[in-house]
Length: 112
Length: 114
Image (cartoon, rainbow over all chains, first blue to last red; front, side, top):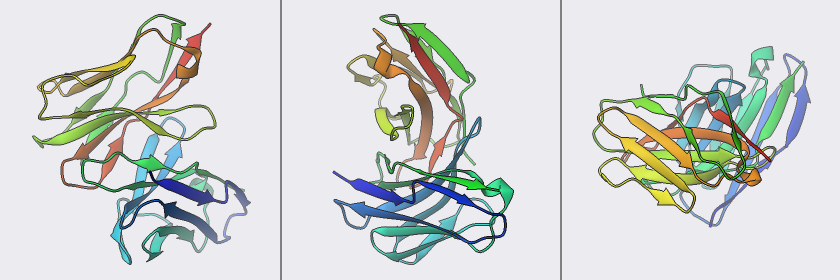
């Protein structure tokens, strides 16, 4: 089965600094990849998804961007962090249209 | 856009008792999938149970079962014989068939009391 590695697990960054969160997947090829943000009381918000290398779809306009340089690598980035970017970020993958989603362990970002 | 609503932010249940978590959703689609995911404290999100909308029979996984009411767009999760390890945040999720976007509710924090 799939294994999702996500890092860093915890990150504290000042406002205006850049961000890079990385996610890699093992145990499958050509997965659909996702970035979610989890905020208290707001559930999981779908940020980006990707069906293949270089193919990124954004669900909400925001200060963040995503890239997929390799089949099993998904990166979440920002050039300048905002306070509102604080949250718990989850990478996930699915391998069929009937999915289930497999999740990474998450990255907790605090912007100060 | 699809919306998923969980109206119970927090719930508690005595160990060995039964609890039901509610979920409603809004869609114009006829074919879709519904899921319940569990996120234990400081642990990974995992799938609890899945229901295909075209199936009338409610899905069951051991102590977990759903009550799927398609006309009412309702998808509740029943946990029987609650165990301490069931303490977690539970998320209801929706996915259109043959699409790739999953949409989640805001979650219900369940505490099992010994």
